[in-house]
Structures are given as structure tokens and as C-alpha cells.
Amino acid sequence: MSTSLLLVDDDRSFASLAASVLTHEGFRVRTARSLHETRAALAREAPDLVILDRRLPDGDGLAFLPELRTLVPGAVVLMATAHGDIASAVEAIKAGARDYLSKPVELDDLVLRARRAAEDVQLQERLRRAESALGGRHRMQVPRSPAMRHTLQMLERIATSPRSPVLLLGETGVGKEVLARHLHVLREEQGPFVHVNCAALPDTMVESELFGHERGAFTDARTARRGLVEVANGGLLFLDEVGELPLPLQAKLLTFLDKGAFRRLGGSTELSSTARVVAATNRDLNQEVAAGRFREDLYFRLSVFKVDIPPLRERREDVLPLAESLVAELCAELGRRPVGFSAAARERLGRYPFPGNVRELRNVLERALVLEPGPNLELEALAPRPGGPAQLSDPHAFVVAGPPPPLEEVERRYVRHVLERLEGRRMDAARALGISYPTFLRKLGEE
Image (cartoon, rainbow, N blue to C red; front, side, top):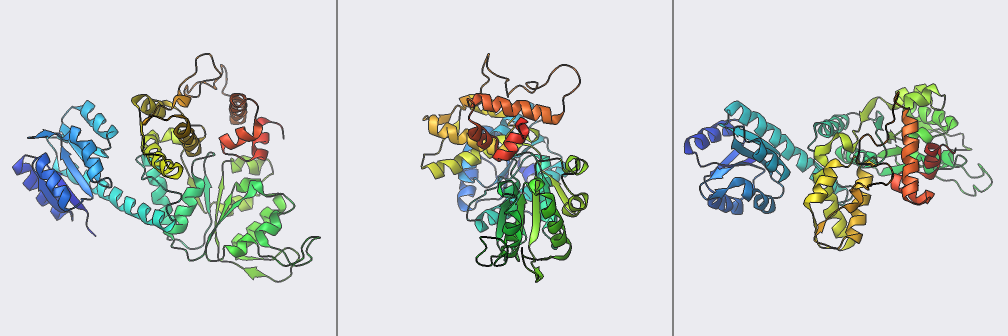
């Protein structure tokens, strides 16, 4: 279906020419010459894309932008501003415009940006379908950052492939499970999505949990039981923290990936499953292979499709829209009226590095919604604390003079810092960091 576009500009000759060119490019174009006509056009039909001029006969397009976002919240907006008026362009982006055009507008540039915006519209629709299929859970925000847009586009290409495994790499809290579920929906799987936290499974039980067992396989095995590989037949098996799997199980997983076949613990019959395996880890598996803790052949097999998920600090453009989406979701969960962000909160969101990524952002917002009763959140927890421990908003907080320390040492310092802020409560610190307790102890250097 073609993208519907509303072009708002009082220059008749430009509007006529631009409408003709965009129609030729496949857009369904309507025009408006004032804010009054724009409101009337929006009442008749909600467009997918709006190109909005700054200077209109009956008002300022930039001042109208918040109202426009309310009237058609799903529309992608391009703001047209005078050449060289960078301040207005930046203000428009902050107010919710996806992009801006400098006037006088070059038609080639107009077509290029309109095409990009149309891709955003299509991506939004695919994400809405995915969210609907997931019952509204694990909601994804349409990313603004090129890095995250590239990640989603890669997943869409991977979804068309057959059973080949996928390896999601990224720091703790970047949203690996959300992306795995998104891939599951993109493939329109008939089977279930099965999530396995490998770090939470005791070594003595992990084989039984994954591959099942026959009656009498061990002392308490009074009946046969299907494993999660079997349960996920026809669907997707998400192995979270796959780097935590013990070596003996890694060999059995490799056999399953190669042949689609496995045996239950204590069984002799070869069974099969068509479950697609998506694995995730925040570890450097190359280092784990070098240290002998992870099989090299399994690493190569898992990484047929390797997807690196960028941390939140490397996609700053996504922070505020993501925070707004999470706050709306949390307000619904908590039964609270919708709230916004103060100017100070927006600045803090822009400066804070979020070492815990999306999970930390959600935790910060949930805490603020409980503790800050006003109509606008201040997010004081993100403000620097003079004289306190290392400032997380300072990019040099964990940097020391001399040669750069190993990453493990930097992580250890940060884990200790979080533990200090939580007054020594280890389980709370592990939860705040979004990692399992064994992983917490390892990063602390006590395992």
C-alpha cells in the first residue's frame, strides 16, 4: 500500500510541483496551505507522513508541531525550515520531527528524505504487527539511531532464512530477549517462543532441562519428561547467557544444531526438533574460546548470523523516545495518569551513560514514577552527586591515569560502585545490574 502524505506549505507553485513529483514516486499526496486547512485535512484522514513548513500565514509550524503529534501520533513528520536556521531544526527534532528540510527545498533531497520517511512508516507498521502478535508485551520503539535501524533491518533479512542459528551479542540490558521475540514474530512461527536462562540452570539439571530425560535416568526421574528443545519444536529456542553452558552440554548442543537431532538423558532413541536456536551473551566468546571455557566449533556454528546490538550510550537519539514509550507503558501498569519529563530530566536523560542500558532506563523510570508524584518527572536519581562515589554521568568516571585497564577491571570497579550505592545488598545489586547472582560474583572477582 502506498504511503499517504500531507504537504503543508503556503507556496502554491512549490506545493504543486512537489506534489506532482511525490505522486510520481508513488505517494498519495494531499496539500494544505495553512494551519486551518491542515487541521481540516487531518480530521478527514490521518496521513502516514507530514511535511510541515515552519512559516505559515496563520501561525508557526514549529509551535503547531506538539498539536500535530497529538492529532496524528503515528505520523512521521519532516519539518521545513529556512536555510541556515539550525536552531529551529534542532528544536523540531526535539519536539518529535523525524527529520528536517532546508528551504529552498531541492526536489531530489525532498524525494530522498520522503523515501526514508516512508521506510520509517513501513517499519512502524511491522513493529505494530509484532507488538500485536505479542499481546502488547515486549514493546519495541521505532529507533532513530542508524545503528539500531541497521540491527532491525538485519533481523528482517535473517527472518527469511531457514533454521540457521543466530547469535545476539551485546551488553547486559540492551534488549536481547526483545529482539529475539521480534525475530520470532517476523518469521510468523507456529511453534512457541521458549526462553532459557542458561545462567539460572544448575549444572546438574541443565541437560535434563534442555533435552529432557527418560524415566529412571536419575534418582528422582519417576516419569519421562520433555526438554525445552522438544517443547520449542516448530518455534524458537532462545538461549540467554549461552556462555554459561557447561562444556559437556556445549557438545550436545552442537550436535543438535548440526543435525536437528538429540537424545533425552538416559534415552537411546534419537528425537528431532525443528526449533530455531537464537543464543545471546554479554561475554566476549572469543576470549572464552581462548580460555578453554567455550567450544570454538560451537561458537562458529552459533554465529552463522551474528548480530551486535549497540549499547544505549551509542544511540543517544533513541534515549528520549524510548523513555517516553517506557513511561507510557509503566503508567498503564501502575495505574498512574500519564506524565512527562521536566527540562532538567530531559537533559539528564541526554547526559547519563546508562551502563545498564535499556533495563537500567526502565528501572530508573519505574522508581521515579513511584517516588516522584508530580506531573513531570525530574529523574533526580540521574543527577550527579557532588562528593559522592564516581559520577556515572561523567564519561571519565572509571578512567585512571596510565595505560587503559582491562575491561574486566573496569567492570569490577563499576560492580563495586553499584554495590556501595546499595549499601552492600548483593542480591539487589545483581538485580539492578540485570545479571544473575553467579555472574555478579564473577564480575566482583569472588568466584
